[in-house]
Image (cartoon, rainbow, N blue to C red; front, side):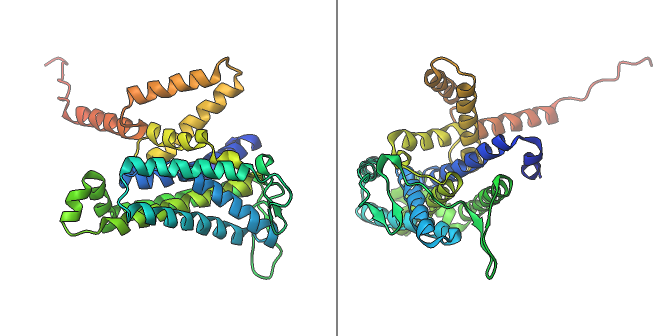
Length: 326
């Protein structure tokens, strides 16, 4: 497939760059699952991403086992999502207040982790580092029983992250196409009516939020293992907003849109930065506004609709008449 051939067509730097873009795609998928299909806007995906990154760092540094660190990243983020979701969903918190609460939790984590510069703030051998960040995080490695660990070099890491992304997309598609997913979409359209039909929407929203948090934590763990570093910037307001932008640009409620939106925005950001364009942020903002105005439903749904209309038009076009001599 095309993904497998990319390392042979790109430079090593581009392979490394595309690897982190795919990690960001996982983060965008986590939001698309809860927002696109559940109708619940969460600004907490950056919090789960950061918690996953720090959990990976703490377990990886203290145990030296990166597979265990990845599991810890998923579990830590999922537990935070479960705790937050339980009190909000079972407390009947409104959608707007839920968005504010998740954003507040993210910013609190940003402030708390930023104040851990003192060497006393450490978990075992892992120093949190404050705004300087946690360093010396072990790289992702292939760990087989009875054999020494094999650190994943850029190309094998690219394949590992790519395979993980494809697997998560497939699992999310299976989830949203199941009976659970159909009820989830009904909740998105009308919570009250879904409840009147006899469905308990609270545990379904909670479970979706926990799965979403776990995916974001997985992305955070992979990010920490990719860069050997994580700092409180992962909890920033800009990171929280960026995840929403990725999904909006690609088109929410499609899964593929989250992936496409992330790649488009990140490639555009890198292109403008590499070109040393003056007022890069302003130009990027203008470009994103134009994309949203031209494709209000997102790139993937809009382009898909245009392709279907074109195919329908070609199928209904009358055949050309033979104008040759009788």
